[in-house]
Image (cartoon, rainbow, N blue to C red):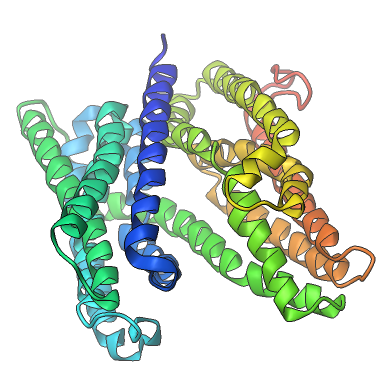
Length: 442
């Protein structure tokens, strides 16, 4: 069995168990925090995740790509430069966050210690990113899988232990819930840094060659900036999308209350169910980036074509049965959340959106591995412009309303999938239809 397949399966199994643990964890949070507390907790998480994203600077991706492409003799020199870069970026983000603290109004409804826990997350995430990138680049997916699973198990354990042992008021309960998240990150940080230190000591005993810090920083930043931009762009579009959809429905004559309810069914029920199998695509992403990077660095076009065929085939293999299940069992699945025929209808007409997203995530990883980060970013921009335009235009029409919104969402997903796929095929010189090489790579 190839390293790619073994790594993918390992991450998929660990991610599935992690998703199950998170489901239980959300049940505990709902019980302990109540409706208002859970709403406040979930409302602040996107902001926290954006800060975490900026702190990581997408170093796991850029470091894994560098490790996969370069000979092992350069790894020790590269890691030293990566640590220096991480120290600089971490200190910068921590200073900026401290200076902005008094003006961050979104934290005013939370315990005063909440923002200091967020500050603690910055160095934890930043330095863990170095170890993650190294293990990804070396194809040691077992350590990544264990870290991802351990985080959720530790968080669930802390949640159950603290809330069973003590009783807190509403504001403190939210703080404690977030503390369990930070606590799990501390455990993961210690585990990853310990394993990284062991491997770094082993590197010291092997032949090494020097590579300038300037070259390392240039390589890492050339990947980190565009990939971070893609993630930030996703965060911003996801933040804007709810307001755009509600505005379109209001223009169509739907009342504010009904518009909010319809969006709740769309995002809270249909999309929650539809994106559940996405952990498989994210597992493929983690393995694909270093695998494609290494093959492309070696100009192994046969390997690149084989990887693309494997990714497309495997995604079809699980994606098609999944959407069939969603279509025929839409009502029983949505009834697990709410008894609503409308939510079941949304799930069924969003099936192209979900299926193509299972392709988009590994295809984007493939683009990053090929060094086409700029193309991936532009594809996201163009597809979002088209999707948002159609969402507002069709959603504002009284004869379409939410159906028009969903048409816009499906269209944007079709567009970005085709752009990703055609760009990859052109780059590695394969036919769009057969995925076989038909032109000579220059």
